[in-house]
Image (cartoon, rainbow, N blue to C red; front, side, top):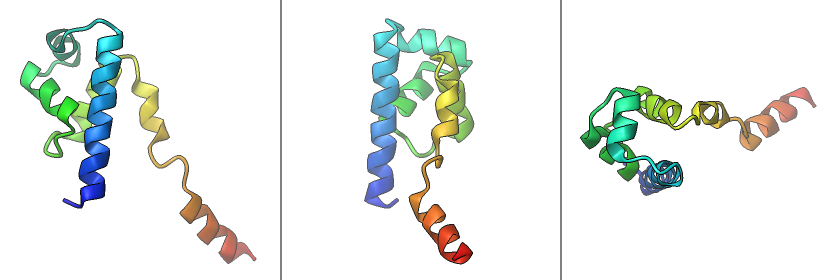
Length: 88
């Protein structure tokens, strides 16, 4: 896996862990809400690339952060620049 992807997954996992801690929830609390195991929550918080996007989405939902999913690729400066170049 490219380092930049591993780093971004680790950052996402850390942000999820901090969100859980700010809510004073245990890993088991989030696991129960997301209907996964505590081990899976641990993997999510480490940014494990083998965890499916669906699980990440359920964990975000369990933390009331489900709308953050819509932010993925929302800011696309390269795509917009390419599109603008075609329009000129």
